[in-house]
Picture (cartoon, rainbow, N blue to C red):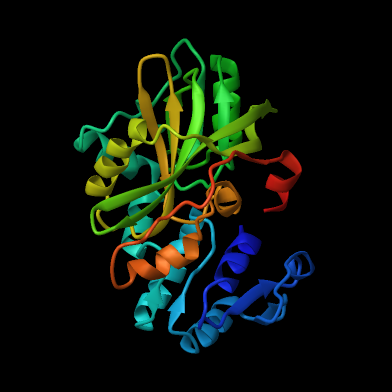
Length: 304
């Protein structure tokens, strides 16, 4: 994702990039002529982030939602009065919380998967998935189908049950939408198909087909409804769906870069970074230059 972001910004004229890199991954990222700062174990990461952010007009933090990491970085950028090229800290706090997201979707009559807080729940017949409220991707998500496994897993891995939700595991196509948002409006960029494998009670993402479908009309209204329900979303965000035989259900909203982002420019010829910059003063001019499916393999996904 980071490499794709840098390559997209490199195509935007009059933009100078400063990048903050972890020393453990810096050799995997080609930065060209960009100014880069390598962060080692000796650095105080947040202090370095603030120092570098002060030198910039705009900041695009890349971080997971769990433990409030992304929210904290967004708050820091906002406190510095710099342009935040992602959703606000308020939006991250809402969309990054699966329980609050579920409640918001229900309140706005958007079809979603039935969800309950794990605290006080006992397992019923069927197959269920337990997720951390602020988990990113498949991290801290577990599949259970019997009472014994449920009890053992909850005891071992969910010390604070109020920090987890439980949902029925539904059969269906796992798709995602790559979108842009601004002040209650949304623009659909690509429709993606996600492939998962169940291993040791956890799903693992094995690959993605970016732009696998061109039937935008089927999803455009849903993007609009989500934009209205989450008006603080801004910039790029991903929407995870489960498509059953009866309905398209929203699983979660990711107020950050998603893995599918890495294949958008090759699939549709759209420079997302340029469009995000356009959002600062107006509407994006989304003009696809091509229309093809791009496959991100398991090995590539692991490296993102």
